[in-house]
Structure formats: structure tokens, C-alpha cells
Image 1: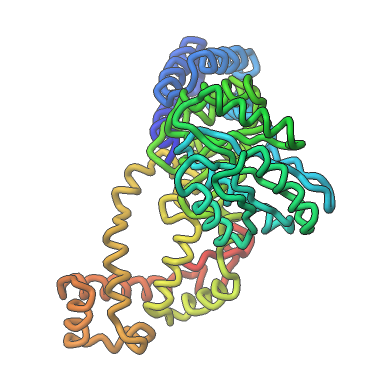
Image 2: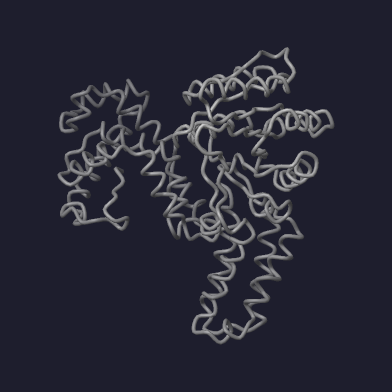
Length: 448
């Protein structure tokens, strides 16, 4: 997950600040020196880091902070506010025309950044909001680019307009807009060609499309894992073609995340979305304040709740809650809870949004064995429907058959069944569940 290392380092700095009753100017400067190094190691632009540290220091050594009751907390507050400013302060939404007017969005980016997948993801988001999008296949150079877009459109339930790979992309764009107007579609998303590197032909093609079609929004898709290169690409595209916003992909990977902190300050264009996985649902609206909160290890409860509400089945959640209270849940319920967790991006994704756990993700991931979870699923799938709903049926001979079916040792089946029984007993003893008290999210409960 992006920013893990940065979060851990910043939390260590803030821990020292909190432990001091009073702060001296030297304390603040020493702490900010560590913050500076942490940001540089996260691949944030040196110029951006310098401006950021100066802005924090100017406020942090003011009289109000130094003489306050809790100066350490005040410095952390200032760092948080400056991080939000750095990433754009306010959330930027796609600008769409009202009603049946056609909005044209042009997607641009280098090959390999995830542009075509992102194009389909955005179409899905717009469709979910009641829009009627049309995807236009304007990449006629990359083998299988059109097919990839068609597969993405099919999964999202969105039409793809294609004229094959022998037509000029400018003509395809013009024809796609006409098609949308005559078929009651109000958003056209142009999936343009990428190159392995920036070249003049690529830029000229994008300029020609903009001259032939009224493009309302130009979005640049960049790979967050390329760090400062992503920022350089954004600057070049903005200078040559003009962009309105950026989509950062692969933010779920082992990336230092510096691009997210540098792009707005460097090229002045906001980040609209971040890609958090391969699935077509793994695209999140970019909220500068929530991202700052995640970076500082304060979690992101709002995104967690929104993710849960968007991905979890409320009826199933209520049924699960009843079973949990009575300790009557079976192995099918366990599978369902794992599936619900996967829909939300997996355990690591959920834990990263919980306050206080951001900087401890390395430790937590060491405890989360994805292979072990897959083996447990294999054990459950080797059971009969009756065994899944009634774990009490599992005698030694049944367990031996299940072990053979799952390809694991009998001891592993015994261990899992024992853990499952202990979980059922624990759930029965939990007072909050037994009495049906409201959770900390105002009564909203997660089914796992």
C-alpha cells in the first residue's frame, strides 16, 4: 500500500513531539528535518519538500504554538493542514454538462499506465451515477487495445464505439460523438493511444483530436509507481496538450507515493481519482484531506464507511448480525464474510483505513497470511452443504475426507475447525453483539 514507509516514519517523528511537554525552536527544526528526509525518501519533489517544510516551520515556531498547552499536537495539526493544501485542499469532481448535452472526456497517458482499464472504471462510475456513457476506441496502434476496451465495457454494461484499427483516431473521435448524440448518450470517453515514451506524433494526435472535437475534460493517467517520472510526464502533457486533471494508478502497489504529493504543486492540476487495484470497481475519488489523514496514520473512516455501504449487501449484513448474536453462523457465513471483505479491497485495505493502524501495516500484513486464507476456503469448499451449515457434524472420518479434498493435512482441518468454534464462542460472549448495541459508526455494522 502506498505511503506505508512514509506513514511509519512520520508517526515516529510525532511520537517524539507528543512526549515533550514544551517545545523549543530547536525541537521543531530537528523534527522537521526528519519530516523532510521522510518526504524525500517517499520520492516527493525536492522543490515541493522545501516549500512544504518552510511553510510548516513558519507556523510551528509562532508564539501561539510554542506557548500553547499541547505544542506537539499543534505541530501535527499544522503538518496535516499543509499536506491537504499540497494535494489541492478541495476534492475535484469531473465537470459534466447538464441533461442530454454530451460531455467529451479524453483519456491520455503513456503505455502501461493503466489508461484503458481506467477508462472503463470511470465509465462504470458515471453509469452508477445515472449517466449514459459511451466508450470510444481511439487506440489503433497497440495490439488488442480495442478488445481490452470492449471487454471492460462489457463488464461495466457500457457500449463501446469502434471503427477497427485502420481508421484515423481523429475520425473515430468525431464519429463517436455523433453516435452518442443520435443514441441518447450524454458522456463520450475517448481512449486514446499511449506510447512507451512521449513523442511528437503522440502529442500531435491528441492536439488534432482536441481541434476536431470539443473536448470538455482531458484526464492524464499516470502510474504512481514511477514516482517523480509521473510528475514529469504530467508537466509535459500539460504544457504540450493541456490537461484538466490526473488519475493516479497502482496506488495499491509497493510505491512510495511521492507523485500524489507532488503533482498538484508542480503542474497545478488536481488528482481526480486513484486506482487501488486491478478490478473495475477499484477506483476511488481522490480526497486530499482523507489522503493526508491516511499518510499521518490517522486512518480514513469516511472512505471505509462509504466502501462498506457501496459494496456490502445490507440484507445479508443484518442476517449475519443475527447469526453472530446467537453464535449460529456456519462455514457458509464465513465464506460470505470473506467475499464481502474482498469486495472492499481485502483485509489490508480495510485495516489501512482504521485510525492508528496506518503506520503498523507491515506488522499487520505479517499476521495476515493470504495463502492460509485460501487454504481455509479450500477446506470449506471440500465440505458438504450440511457440514457447512452445521459444524457439529464434523467427526474424524468427515475431517479426513475434507483434508483429502482440500489437499491439506488433517491437522490443518482440525486447527481451522477449532479456531472456528472458538470464534463462535467468543461472539456469543461479546456484550455489544449480544445486546445489539450500536457500534461506533452509528449502528452500521460490518458482517465480519
